[in-house]
Length: 353
Image 1 (cartoon, rainbow, N blue to C red):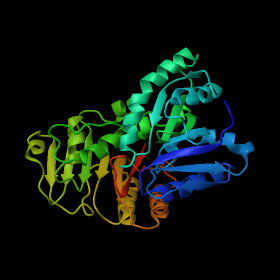
Image 2 (cartoon, helix red, strand yellow; image 1 turned 90 degrees about the vertical axis):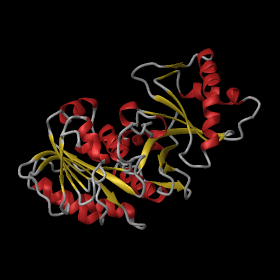
Image 3 (tube, rainbow, N blue to C red; image 1 turned 180 degrees about the horizontal axis):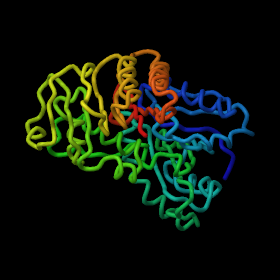
């Protein structure tokens, strides 16, 4: 592989500063200090190491370590002013220099309104590029090899890079393509579905989300998160003073508890606690910490509604609140956060045994 020039991080537009602050901390802790290039609302951040000698250590950074990055790509070359009449002949030699075998080919853009038309170009360019790679001796689909990324800033400018499959998002642009399920009472249901896909492996989902398990949904109404649990056969205590969807109540798996979510406690420990209450992040973190420290739940997924400023610092503070609560116990060091695609001005947390 050619030398790594930078780390390309895809993120939600408007969260470039948070993504930049986080990667600067993580890279510095690995001994790879550098600087960030981040434009407001661009939907991505470039992290450039000060010393190219240590740039290879950026391979140790996985997307699961980061809260605000959807994808991490090891950038090797930036191709600008591609000829409109023959982009293939400009891109192909650079890819051949990068490698001859790849697991997957991903043509990507930032997730912004401005880049929507560019995504159409990527779809049209993909087929001729695959043909050119095959003719040029570059294999795509080889198991156990890096993924090839072409991150287009325009139809004539592209970052070329690669990712390590087990340290990168498995989804194009780091975005899971989920369909709103028929019968779900609100679009918030997609947040919990994405959280299960993000935080749990396929085997963990099979082991931890079995029919007959118990769950509590704090701030449940009208039932978007409860729907995901019922769909998997869990019995749910839906805690909210608001009304629940009638179809969910008819399932026979839901008990509607009309009580303040901060006051509710289960009669016995439950397998899952989920929470999407709109409240100050630190107060939600303290609530999760109490449930976990007291052994009232085995696993928890929750949302933190972030303030307008110092959002990265707020996430770190909430993590410290929960870690302090579970210190010395089996859940110590297991707090994880991620800004999911279906999140907005919030992040999702997970703590599980």
